[in-house]
Structure formats: C-alpha cells, structure tokens
Image (cartoon, rainbow, N blue to C red; front, top):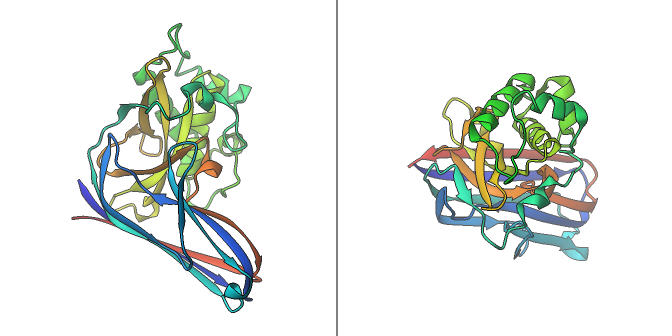
Length: 273
C-alpha cells in the first residue's frame, strides 16, 4: 500500500516565549516493512538532524534570546509518502542494542508480579535457547486488548502500564506499554513502537503505537504486534520510531521558558495514493 501522510503540530502561547528547545521523532525510515519514497520535516527554526541510540532519525531546534522575543506560536510539519509491505517479522541490524537491553525496566513499562501472573496464562516465557512462541504472543496480545479496553482520553502520557492494567482501560499507548511490561516481567525482550495507522473509519488511531517482541535472542529476530487490533502489523502501519517506552520516542518533546499557558493542536491525515 502507498500512503501519503501529513502531520501538523500547532503550539499556541498566551505570552511570548523566552526560550524553547524541541526534539522531534517524526521521520520514518525505510526497512523490512516499508520504503520511504520521500519525507520532509519543517519547524520554525533550523533543524539539526541526528540519530539516537535506537537508530531513530531525530531532529531538534531552539528559540534563544531575542529570536523568541515576540513568538506566541510554533508550528511543526511533517509530510511524505511511504510504501508499506506488511512485513511483521525481521532481524535487527547489528547497530541496534542487544535484545536483552530491552528487558530493563522503564518508568512507563516496568515489570511487576501482577503483570507476570497475567502473562503466564498465555506465555510460559522464553525456552533455553531464549526463543518465544509467536502464537502464544498473539494470544497474549488479544488478552491484553481484552483486559485493557480502548477508551479515548482515559489516560495521559504519564500513565504507567500497571496503572492502565489495573484501571482496565487506556489508549493504544497504554495497551502497548502493558504488553511490553508483561513481556519484561516474563523475561521476554520487548519494546515500544510509535507510528501511523491507516483506517478510514478510525481517524483517532492515525497516530498509533504498537510493540516489537524478540522471538529469538540469539538470532536477534523480532515480531511487530499491534495490540489494539490484536494482529501482526500489516500494510496499514508505518513505523516511525522505536524505544524502551513512549518517553524514549515521543513525536515531539521539549522544554521552554516563558510562553504562559500553552495549547496544542495535532492534525494527522493519511490517505492511500
């Protein structure tokens, strides 16, 4: 499937900004499941591109001093075209961290005995060769989607996996965090993925999140699973960034001084071409 994507983030401030620094994870890369035909990212100031420890392409820009004197808004645009191939299993590049790195606990997806107990009803854990059964992972994904029902605006970006699991509701980010935290609780390496999802009848899921779980540590083999739709990723998915949890690869993260009250509007458009 060939998808054209536009992503606009509009910040408005009640007072002029004195300083602001923004870091962007908004540029998808070509890989086993997709080919990026073209992509552009625009910001109010010059962007400085770099690559993070997980291989994501990121960029940053800043307002400083008199440059920000009269600034009361900030607009970030990303747009491009991606061919999706629907490849759900793949082998990590050697430049990526070792799979066992993704066993480490994080604030939003920490292991917990309660999560481990739930996970054991679906997955026994890795075998002696540190391999995991894919069918068991898919059953776990469906179980998570049932235990943490999708409910718009039910959580925030600071909600932890355990909090969402106990509440029984969340958004795609929370469902992904719960899946990752359960896998880590069972000794299975897992990580968080941010991206886009095309569905004409689900515009709220245009900005989406899913998980990658290590099927075989020795082979560095991974599988991408969409917990919200309890399926393997397919041609509807565009992978943008990967990390230990949401905090490691949000679309935009930053700090500021001044500006007073901030409001943010995000608009994402996805259509097949």
